[in-house]
Length: 81
Image (cartoon, rainbow, N blue to C red):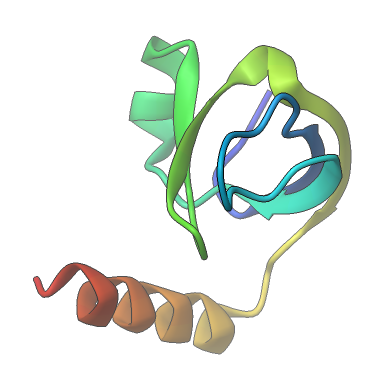
């Protein structure tokens, strides 16, 4: 299964403090080679690592290259890299 640039519905429960909870859409941005080796993946927006078992349903794939680049630039900005 491919993960990078796919949007999944994920169960984010239980949450702590101000973390998002419930069933939410998540976008996987981590490299596919890493996704295939690890049980967890890094996600964008409120950057968080999730165990793959939280991913409930693959609902879409982000195929727009321009939008992908905008997300990568936003990550670089947020992470100051």
